[in-house]
Image (cartoon, rainbow, N blue to C red; front, side, top):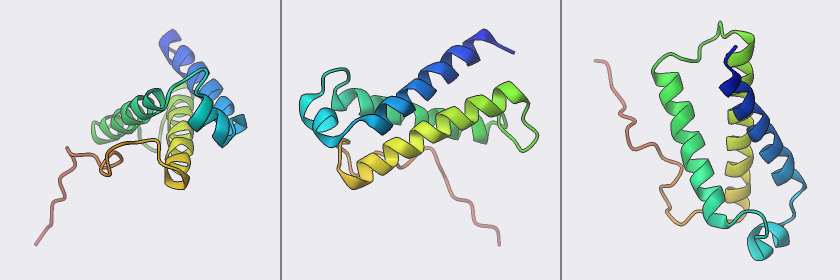
Length: 108
């Protein structure tokens, strides 16, 4: 198990807990600990990180414990940020959540 994974898992789990208990005034108006730009950058990173890991086969159905925990922590935080943004926007771009590298291939 990589010690870096544990650090990422801890950070992402703590951020998840923090955002859950954060009300809208604290998140959108006060912005004491993190700015809206910080949440935007974090969501952008997590979205691309998870996409690249899945596309490159780093996460699959037979994941080991540490990798599974890493995926679960990152995915949980990403979905929480997505729900917050869906309810009240903190991202500036309307295409923020769309992966531009994603190309759909149609088989004929």
